[in-house]
Length: 429
Image 1 (cartoon, rainbow, N blue to C red):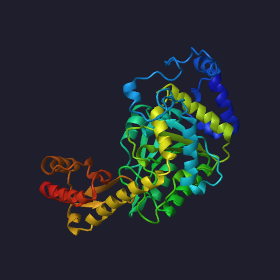
Image 2: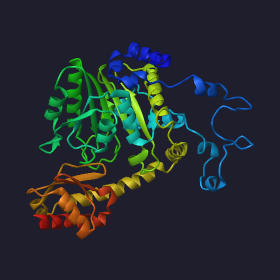
Image 3: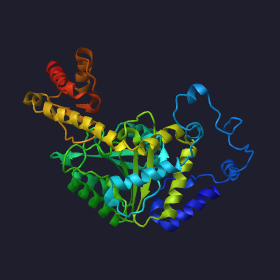
Image 4: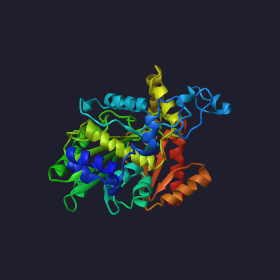
């Protein structure tokens, strides 16, 4: 093991033995290199003639660039063309951390890590897999989950996704979750929860969130070391009253010394910048301090360094500029209202009782999606093909469930969407 990795491990063991036990073998071995090329480059940063870093500069010392590109970017060249740090831009990390507290006021004064920038959430999930999953580890997920988890955690890290039933009587199935979490021997457990859920578009009510947290707390009290990953890709897009407005992370952050809360989030869905690829990983645990978090951040940055080197500097700079814009909040609210209007159009369309003959809506109240479950033995794939070929309507088939991204459909087209599904079901019956 590299001495720099062992140095970080020693810090983590001293500060939190449970966190050290949660790390995968890769997580224990990884480090951010402070020596070698990066260390020598840092030491030479203030030199007049700097022949260390592998970039090119103009004779005036500014980043070398093509005018055909520079002319299209309304930013200082230093914010667009050079590499960003593997940790991410310090100013953006600090801004995102401050926004976490604004969005989740119940965090109060709970100390959390400085977020590490990832190349959006798929990459962030991969880095969490790197840090915490060994081959054969089980990751507990609901039975409705983002299919990319299979590629990221299953194919890439040889983890197993073990499922629990998501819905019971139109709510989060707390009994199924508790049974799955407490299955098997006491030890390391990995839980992955995604609210608003993809594909269901569901966020629990606050009472359900309290139930989830209590179940995790009891399991931790029994001696389990629990990595709780919250996939908050669609955070903030909640359309009903009484639904939890804060991330589950807020209640997990200071829950128990055996519970490490790992928050995955980013600008992708929250700020409608899917192609910018800017996400974050944030850590929190009861008793966590700056030294523990710094060690976890260094390991995460090391994993990123050895994977993609760093995320786009240009994207990070643009995102930060948007957050500092005086009209940001107003503009974001306008887009939220557009999404709310589409959600309301879905609810209105589903009032048509004839649809119940062929499908019913699964619980939904947030996010980008909702699902309809087909009745009477209908094949989702067969219905999907009819919708494409006869009605020019695109949906996603998940066995006997169709996932509908109302986020991508104008409110005026929502009724036609459901009418098409109904007619396709009629033909396939």
